[in-house]
Image (tube, rainbow, N blue to C red; front, side, top):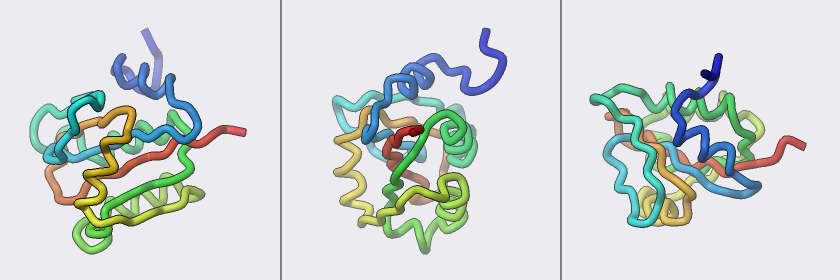
Length: 131
């Protein structure tokens, strides 16, 4: 048994398979997940696990070079945007309208669905390299 870190086997498999430039999405419980994109559903009940819980766990496991968020996050969910900037201080941040964000999720390797029930608690993480 693992002693620390992420315990979910599907999430571990996804993170171990990421290459430079691959995208994963950490999403609230309401974001539509496109057909054909791998779904890792961690949602238990509304709010559990939170977006912040999942993003913190993922941040400890992978290198991230860029974040893509909905423009609406700046005004409608600034605490989570602040958290993302703190967890990934060297990552570029791109903002796109929410409708475009949903289209971009079609290119992701996977969507990690949280129990988060606040608006615009979604991010695309672009995998970086550790060297």
